[in-house]
Image (cartoon, rainbow, N blue to C red; front, side, top):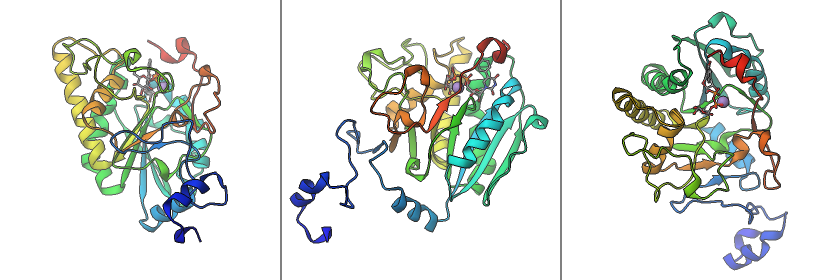
Length: 297
Ligand code: 2GW
Ligand code: MN
């Protein structure tokens, strides 16, 4: 068997599909310089991972915000999550909304629950997006810590389109932004005003992460959302708001607290960018939105 063979032989065998260690790609970066895996289709074995997480009987919390008209996205979001998100594992959907009566009743598989959390609305959309950090933070301490092992925090204007499973789970994870996964550091849209708490100097930063998909253990998400919320409050007191709101503060955090795993843009794609060859799966896809009608500014 493969186990008996010396290491150089395993390297030579890496082209063989029968080899049980054949999980690598040469066309994408598979690991960061701080040894965090970057998750692409073809780089992991979901059978092994599912077995490990099932043995731990892990429960995953999926947080999503549907404030005002964004409740229209919930039906497709939940339906597709039932098909593709953490199949075979325990899941709690945490739906933050100001309109609980508009949360659709979607049939759920065994071991999966919807929890509706009523929250206030904010008049400015930037505030709706940014306050997610504060709310995830306070509910982590009050509730999530007692109910789930991991939190996955996502945008709602999306649909699942292929498997999103336990391969994403780690202490702290972020997702490569689909517009910047192939871009140079100089073009990353970090906050560049030194006066902001989200400021990232030109010679720092590893990747540009998407605001719409991050997570980790409840403790790590608690720490992340605390820092981001506090940074926003410092800025707010000075009349500053970072260029891409919560996404900017998230990116600042990840410069100094490196994620232990990074998800490829398979996990947050936008078809406006086409479907390049390196994407073997499109797992979570932005829905086209009628900005004028839905955003109700
Ligand atoms: C309303 C008007 C304009 C923008 C957002 C909203 C709005 C957002 C809303 O009325 N109700 C609501 O629940 N939201 C929540 O905020 C919802 O969960 C939504 O997915 C999230 C972010 O807003 P979204 O998806 O319209 O903005 P995107 O797709 O441009 O998001 C990216 O940039 C944001 C910051 O500007 C965030 O970082 C987000 O995570 C990014 O994906
Ligand atoms: Mn969005």
